[in-house]
Length: 171
Image (tube, rainbow, N blue to C red):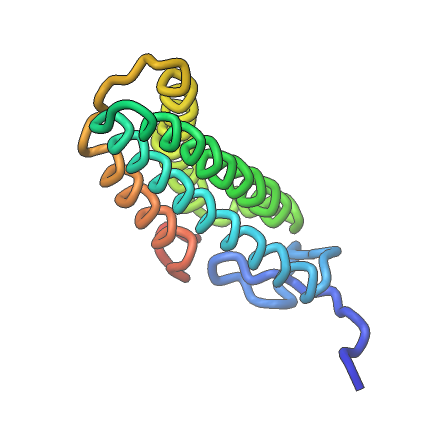
């Protein structure tokens, strides 16, 4: 009853099959699966927290009086979800990427493109969102660009396609 011993596996990296020369992993199947689950849960929480925070900031710019205090408190909470999700996605993602030999960075351009999108859009908007939460909390309220949540959604969709498609930009 229960699971057998954890087996070491060769992680399929863009077409390289288990047993291919030079591909090794000290990671068990179970550990690899849990890291993927953590990466996905972190990414979902990150994007959900970012979108919720951006929409709350838009509402915050439209309301007056005590409603602004309520918005500021809730923005802090959703921004914390955004931060925790980003941290979980980042830690699990890099653990997966560097957990095999050769690393995932040598399996084609997909990971380079994915990380470029993450760095130039998602992390940039994450930092911008965090700065706006702080500004709004101290009363410096300005309307945000309407397109920002849509930029986040397009970037997230691109990251998902690059991560999930088995042959796109892979060797």
